[in-house]
Length: 283
Length: 337
Image (cartoon, rainbow over all chains, first blue to last red; front, side):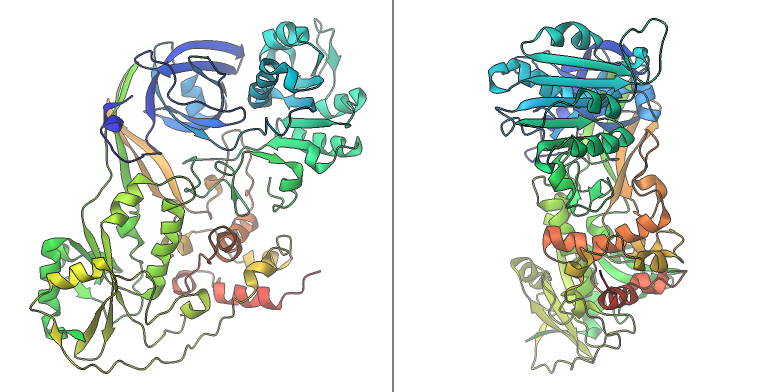
């Protein structure tokens, strides 16, 4: 922890804690996972629940809100970051040992308790698998608490599939679990499914009975998946999604991430569809 | 009642200024706003206590236009935060109007409640005292009473002064107000006062039921008409006493630098533009609608009060004649399916 923060008696939610990047893993050509822990090796700057986020800061460049993965007994936080802009481009250049800033945890997280006893249908596209993965890992850790688990995931190409080891090796081996993977266009060495996620979802048609669907991906994918789920008979209180907006403060002050009177950083980012339908259609 | 004779006003400001930084309404060359009395130069500046509203509100005293947050040292892999810049020096806003006091109360809700306390705002606000200047003669664009402001006895004022011609009637309302009053020991006199009588408002605005009605008007065609002239210049947000949105940026000079925040504006396209290219409010109309819904509906829903204080500044500065009073009227009169 940085000295400036240690001496203060008051809370300083906007001041990051300086941590060390202890590992970096290439997930796809433009997604890397950064593993961080306290600079003195003592573990975590904070704990997060599935679906919560953290601000990661390359201090001389900027900071961004990123979905954060952590599990009990894990001595580090993981941020899976897609290279899309100025900050993430710089983050992708750093090496193991780099000191970065983090603050959090932010947001409400997934309703892991309310989903107990349900069949879980996880539907993700691209980097949208990152936040769902925390929930998926939570389900596997507490396997008896949840019913059948179905994971439907797609990306532009096979190279863009995130977390391949989990997708193809670890998760399919879990009890009562099915993993379905699709890519947008055919490739010579790909013998899996080809096509968009919403169509694949309708083809697979996981039953809505006793199920909860959790959706994350690009806005256009989310839009069509929500339509498909509705068509398949999922009620609005059986569908959960997690939103993203531009954020600066992460604590509901700076103003920009509102939808209606909700601040996505603080009140979200996770919503049931029935809650979203109460908000202005700006998501 | 205690009074401050106007002949002793300058002396009083000097005495107060020796105890804390005092911000007063000043016309300085082409600008007017709340500037530090310590920088007052009679040949350049004009004290504007008689004016209703100077161009800039005093919000900069508690939320500066730019504010350093923390220092950064960056030496390759080694990066650290060497200091933070919470500013707790005592300040006094002298002469704020009720609408501007309400603006600060609205910001108190944002920065000091709902889970997180903003340490920068808290440091300034905890050490800030407000001497409000009661309004008895509203201007042509004033409509504060419609927005839950009492212009004569504004909530949130530590002291209220009433302009009675040759003197100000001086009324301490809080412990902080008593403390400031004590600083002026010997300058205040006891006197039987006759307070001015309040003049009627020239502009009639009826906000009753507007927040509720707006819930069903997100997609109303009214926004197309109203937003048409807006050029998204953001002037309204800069002069507004309650607009508080901010950006966070970094400035590095070689290995050393700092992170700072600065006022931002929902009028700007970059405000909500995401790194991936998406923008939930990419269109001008969407940003316009956001500003007025935030003022009149969303803030009311979240904090129980509107985010407009009826000061009228945005009406005066808008280069395209967008007028919040007319918007409130249009909402009242709109037909909703």
